[in-house]
Length: 359
Image (cartoon, rainbow, N blue to C red; front, side, top):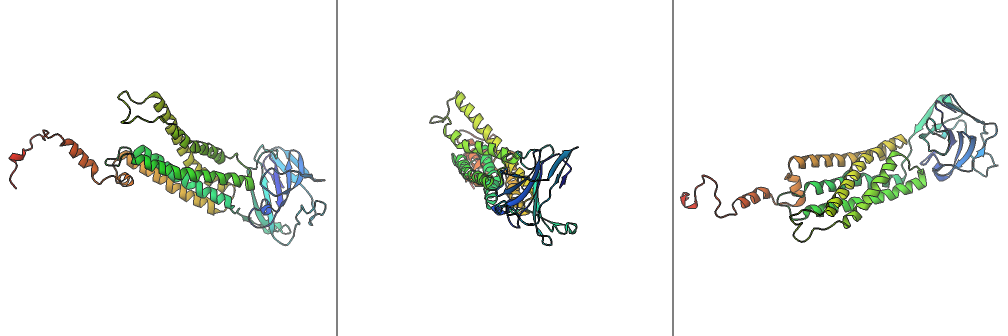
């Protein structure tokens, strides 16, 4: 087995079906070549393998930016490892797995850069291979089905409502806050569930928490989860509003922290939805999960950007009025009422009541 990079490399014999890298938890028979030589492992979960057995006569050579593993094994599964070997069946395609550490990663301590599997007849390699995509585990599906709508749509829209619906003419007092709290409560719950399933997925199938997607995800979830606690400790205005002197320094500082962290999480969260899609492609998953995540994320992001742009151009737009329950035409009505509230007020040049025609 050869690589054109200086890295650890591995190949193994598994079985067809979901979770080929571990044979669905039943065990894959894997040879790994790294800086310590060639060892054989029985891999039942996606974590750094342990208890490897040195392979007699095998070599692992890493020179001039390339890596080569040479190993000889019997076709039959050996009995000396208590069933922790899989047989090779020439003439019958079987699942062969592979993984590589990435250029410069020569120690097995570091995760693989890429990995995959294919259906190969080792008795007729010249006949080609049939590449396979990995099936998404239930934990990954639930992770994306909770996270994509939370950070791709619901939480961004809740933030936009708080920012753009305060001054909608005719909206009931405090309606923007009720909407903001409802959107953020739903989004907060979904993102927390999504994070729980991400942890379960990594515990059962991956163990990899050092991709950019997972690092940003932990930061975003930490900020998002703490935002309700941040809101609870806000300095409340007195009855009748803040005095003419304006908001106290404590309230100003709280708003800067709450809004600043909130928008940071919103932006990173939307970006991370796209990074999650790219990671699913990088890990060679079948199209289903990343297509679903992409569609949900793009719909939410487009809706958020479109609504924010519309509200900046026209704060009293029809969507904001419908969302807040503002009275139709309330903006014009209130302006007229304000203009005519003084009985003595009269538009310049307009006739008095006594001067108007009888009809």
